[in-house]
Image (cartoon, rainbow, N blue to C red; front, side):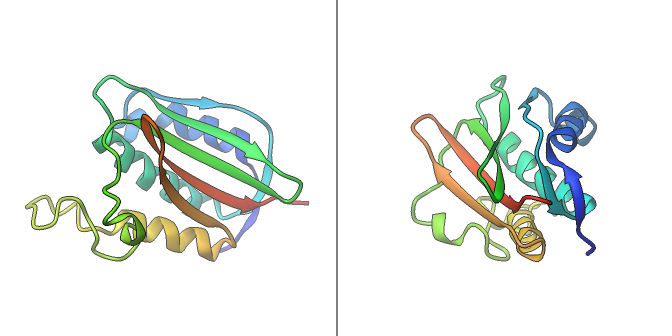
Length: 148
């Protein structure tokens, strides 16, 4: 993986505008310019894994909302969906390999790898990934170092 400076605002605008090509409809992005240290392809894969997860668990017809915040040294991307909350019993483990809400399902695309891969990529880019149950939704937050 090779990290370089990416305009996170431009990147997320592109990803949200093209999410329908990954079969994920109704994705919106709230912009704000922020250059970060990241690998573009790994970051795109990470965002797509989280979007697919959000798409599976949202209330049909509700938007998946991507927002961007920044501090002096970091930028954070939050992906929120209104829908099923993460079971508190598995919250600590959702980023572990083979943890899935569809254990034993015949769909080979859901083997509990997506969030594991996303967390691994974020760590390799020097970032973090966390999940949180909110009042009416679930949010995943990715935090990256800002680029100089």
